[in-house]
Length: 344
Image 1: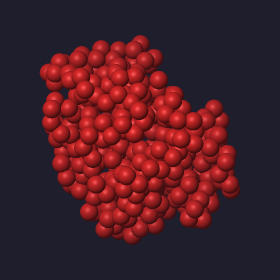
Image 2: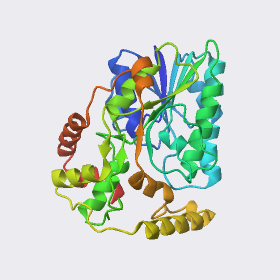
Image 3: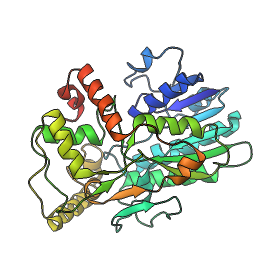
């Protein structure tokens, strides 16, 4: 098939490129010229289309002859105003959807996130499935705008134009320099990550990058997936704080030990969220703390992936297997300092 991949210069997008190339598809990537394209330039046979999701002529030009779209691009940072998040995550998705339909593409695979279900008042979410409704109030702009974009994608499903949303949770693995794992490891390398568990276990589903990319590849061809969202995770969840201790031991870091009272943590996160609504702050600096970031470390979040196993694919890479591959890659690039260099 002839496929277009957005977000290909990013972490997960690059693994979707790899999966499509291995499958023999003809791959075009929509990228900005100023992005880091060093890895993509090593991948044989891919075609570069230069542009931006906010530039509709470039999007329409990139769509010429495309059969399947893998939409991985998004504003995932915690930096930005409401207008920026809506323009990029919602407006960009709408423009891409419209261009895909007009160009005669037959399938649109949207890389969504379980964050679309993270409400302000939610607690632990254990074993939830795709029937869980969207919340009425979201923890942050990323969650809100990803949910809005996902709804656009799923409601665009129609005969001849199949749309599907995948929700990989906590994607990790080689070539990630700015996600949750390098960020937490960077803090542990300096001994500055406190224990926020409150003395209780926090269980989480994660998703190794190759498992997520394999699900995207399958979603491009599977039957009976139109208009549906799917959770995509590794075979087994992890206990977050035990995992962090194991990572510290593996890479010679300092495991979290100093505990922060939960009430103090929640009050500080709420205060920062309120203050960071001011555009001068939101546009220039990432917040030091947020309700969203603390929720990821203090709320259990696991998912029922039986629908994914039934309709798409069973994840083949376990956490331990993925960690061995990540460790080998970290060694190949010069060690833990190189892995965490963009977040230190």
